[in-house]
Image (cartoon, rainbow, N blue to C red):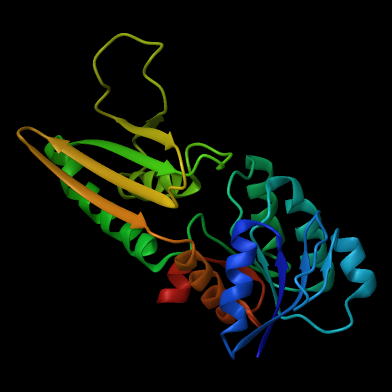
Length: 255
């Protein structure tokens, strides 16, 4: 059985993962960390990782992190010091935090993904392959993402991951454009446009548009509930537990 420390236990995804874990005989949440410090009764929740380190008596195999960039450094401090692998699902990390994650992966196993769903990770492969054919044929590339009105970062980490996957397939020859309102002029053929929509309770919609002369090809992914991300996170936790130091991704999980 995989013992999990749940970082961001009182958040939306924290509750989703806790519910899924309670029905999964292969995992157990041994403790949570959240600034709210509110326990559901199924496992203790500590306000900080320092508090967790002082009180956690049961061993843990992996951290699942759905917290915030503000909590990231304390989480990774604990991960490295206690040699507990970390599944990092938090989006909106700074460049410095991403650099730290790469550095820490030399000391402990880490898995980072902007989106934990199986569908999105297959989409990352599909749009990369499509771009290699379509970009050379003159197709413009646009990404549109939509999320609920409580999401703090924009564009979404998934939208950026899609852009990065496309750009990787194009030898990083493209740049990203987030706003065209302050300029006048036709579209740069070497840009990937990324647009964000925020409203209501939309769990997550991502659309990749390849627009050519007289034809348009679209790749769409719609998340109807947050459970798809929770299921992916638990699969990643099972995969990462016991792994040697290194940087892993959902591509490693799904094979």
